[in-house]
Length: 324
Image (cartoon, rainbow, N blue to C red; front, top):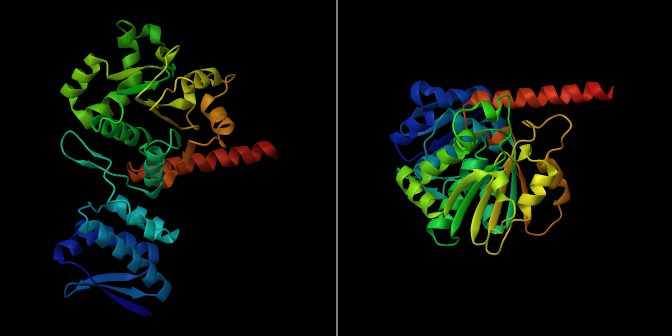
C-alpha cells in the first residue's frame, strides 16, 4: 500500500475538489480503488502505488483548474480522469488559460476538452476547418465564438452562418409563414449561439446592417464571400454538389468552418453526404484541416456520452455482422 499527501491552496479548494456530499472525490475513489480524505489542509490518498499516482495526478489537475477559476463538477472530474488515463495530463493545463471570447453576460467561452482546444487552434491557424463529431462537442458554439471575436477585433467584416434546410420528418411546405418563417427553425441553433455572444439587440442591429447573415445554404449560390467568417453547420446533410458549391464561395481574407456529425445524416438513402466526400477529397490540401471529435469531447450531460458510445458500439456490431 502507498500513501500520498497533497498540499492544496486552502479549504475552499478542498471543498471544490471533493464536491457536494463528496460526489467528485467518490468518482476518483471508484475509478482507482483508492481511499481519499482531507486532514490539516492536505488531501491524503491511500491505495496501490500506481493507482495512488494516477489519483494524485487527477487531484493535482483539479486543483490547478480551481486556482484558475474553473468550476469543478462531476463532468470535469470524469474528463480529467480520462485525460490522465490517456497520458494527456500536461495538455489539460492549456485549456483554462485560453479564453475564446466573452458572452453577452460576461461569461468566458473556453475550450473544455483537449479536442476542443485543438479545434480552436486549428480554426485560428487555417483557412478552412472541418469539425466532425457527435452532438454536444461544441463544434458550432466554439466556431460562432471565434467568428464573433474576429468580428469585434475587425479581422473580418461579416459573419455568415448557414445550414442545409433538410426536411427531417417534417415537410417545409406544411410549416406556417413565409419562406423565412419556414427555414428559421432549421437555423435556430445558430441564432441561439449568436444571441449568447452578442445579445439579441446587437445581433438584430448587425443583421439589419447586413454584416451578420443567417441563411439557408441555397442562399450562398453565385456569391463570392470576401472578408467573412463563414460557418456551415449540419454539413452532413449537404449533397456533394452543395458542398462543392459552398467551398468555392471562399473569398479573400475569409475563413470557413464546416461542422457536422456523419452519424446523423438525414438525406435520402440514395444520396451521398457532401461532408463525407469532402473529408476524403480535401484531406491533403494545405490550409484545410480536419478535426475529429469523439464521445470524450461531449460537454453535455454524462448520459449524452453514454448514448454516443452505445450507438457507436451498435453501429460497429451491425457492420461486423454485415461482413460475416
